[in-house]
Length: 308
Image (cartoon, rainbow, N blue to C red; front, top):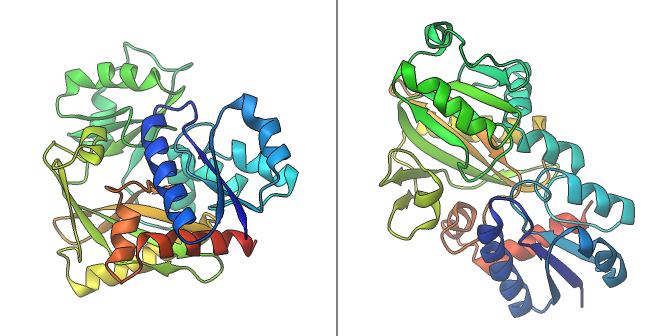
């Protein structure tokens, strides 16, 4: 019987969601016969991980100090297999700015963007140049937050500086992105060398965009499977998702988020290397759409981790 350590909780802004993901994963793994240990992760638990010496670690941590390569690097030093992507891929994908740079280098479609650094940012900056390049509305994003934390859609030029200041409370770098008006969809990808793209999901939200409240409050969002897109757009999304996953060196599983504009053009928003695994999460929904239940999904993720 394989011993699995499920890491959850942590210290990021997404702690509560992580606890829910981890509890669901642990329960499912027990149902299918794994020996499971649960750990609410913090720096003081590093020695405990080594002492437990699990066969594999299921990382259900979201956000900083979990999804960003830090835990992955420690587990690499201990030579303990773990779910999801490795150190380098995790660090790049967690950082929206590094991800955008990689997407641009690989020729993958993503919205136009500008990078601002807190150390060089002038609060009296004439924002007209930003609007001239990106237009309005404009999307302001903290560089390394998940679950839409530190993300703002700004409709008025005079509100841009305040949104940037708010985003700087989370990170030293902020991403300004051209707003894409259209459908939001997501594609879950699972696998290592030969990844599989699961059914594309369309996301609708009661709020203006798919923010933290919409993601985790029952009744405030809807996951539409299959997405209401034509076959050509669906094929493009699947192709771009797989290339994004492979170009960024992802393994195990991940989720690629998109906006589709009014002309049917698809733009990658970001990639999540440890997507949520709660009852409301997108990856389990996508798997269920092709007959993979939750227990089978986590079992497959464990087996992909053991392939490394």
